[in-house]
Length: 461
Image 1 (cartoon, one colour):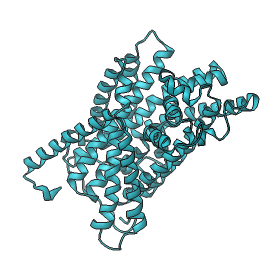
Image 2 (cartoon, helix red, strand yellow):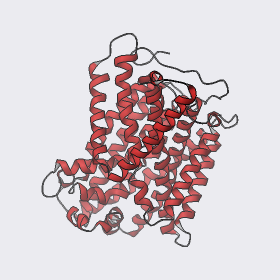
Image 3 (tube, helix red, strand yellow):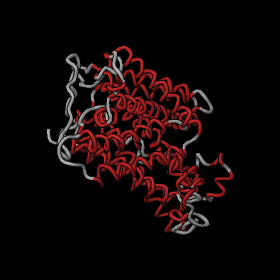
């Protein structure tokens, strides 16, 4: 099958596995990506980013979108070469070797299992605030069960329900934008119109970059679209286009809502930095003071529902990753089965759901659970992104046969993307780096055991 720049790599599935069905349209792919990201993702970290960036929160999202564009471009390159489930695992396997592919999949697994857990926890917290008689861990568990059943029902069913939820989220966002513009017209802004881009008291590049390392969390999930490459109708080019489209749409939505909220925020960035306890509710406080309690409640309900379905998309992507690794005998083969009725990797989905359920309920039962989970979720994804960029260089520069690679597209752009990822990882919390390092070490041990059992040497990596 022809692909970008010449050859496309396809690897035959084992005889005891089923085939994923090509039922997802371009719209479905974008819906899954936006669901995983969530259109109002900045709501929960608005106050933190305001304080960290010295008020230049919109600049943070502009820079973060550009930074993630390098990663989206590398995904678009590799999904055309390897139109398979497994995403970065499959790309690194082809571009760098089987060992690197396993490490990429192992690190991405940390992201795909923990991000849904955080989203489920957000949903549980929001529902508990609306119905405090029910503990948040119960609401969290209910969200896991409901969305898991939808995923098991079939990818098309989940996509249709997900589209309805996404439409609701975007409708609430539109209501917020209209109400915010009305409030600005009626009462004026709390600060200068350029402040969300320049910051309070002058622009600080260091402060913006420090905030970008946190803002990247809002984008994790657009890459999950690539996990559905084997279920997308229209070929790999449609998947590549959906990845880029999802990132651009999310970037615009994030910039618009943070710009308006920053203009209306009653507390300055300096005040938020001095009172960290106010940061988590800063967006809701802004909405309440500028518009009214009705919009506060509407945003809270939308966040509760949207978070659960963000987790649905993440759980689906995690199931495809486990399926792909099991199909290549990197994980237990039982997870490589495809259900004949629904066409989904049922066992892989249930395995992902079980891990996510344990992590989410554990965190929901602890006062510091959200902090512990959210501090480590981005390391797995960023490590996988680094191997993705290396895979582009490895495949086009060293492994592909035929026409020479484009230095700009296949060397310079992925190197820039790699540099961005490294810079963000450096800014990550010490806890995140420690957890990521331990997870990587465990993965290397698992890989070494697999080599020992198969009698393979380092040359097979």
